[in-house]
Image (cartoon, rainbow, N blue to C red):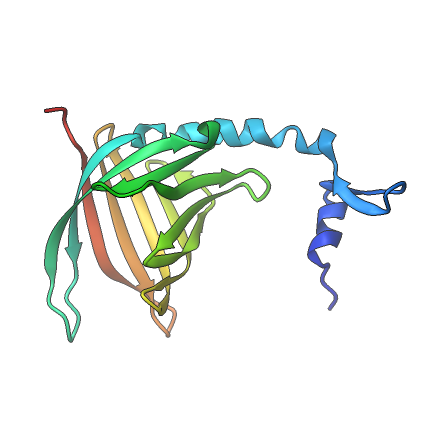
Length: 183
């Protein structure tokens, strides 16, 4: 069975066209023009996340490691002219975190320090959005599923699950997140 290569797909979707004068593929600008507005509109779905948050992380026990609870503080900001979000820990540099890809119609959650990869989601189902994908954490590969449930304007919950070799998902940890109140 033949499958199209990436450039064939881009041409067949109308996103790229052949420029006969330059003899190269170029972006089809009239078609591409609608996508920034779609991305900007979808980005509004996470605007409630902007601000400082306290995270209480409950890590599950394993046969060789104990359960424990830890606390983190994160700040989320709107970036890139309102088309993506960054995250930073206490005193750390902001790093890319979340954006919407209007071409695939999927959310992309990126990890670029210690934990590396991109989780993807088709979008919200009620107050929950689920991201999945391969990640590498300190050199260990896994497939992760993260469900984020908005509990209100100042509270959300994240549940992380790892895919086991038999295809089942197992909870690894969860975060109880509350907006930090001004001092």
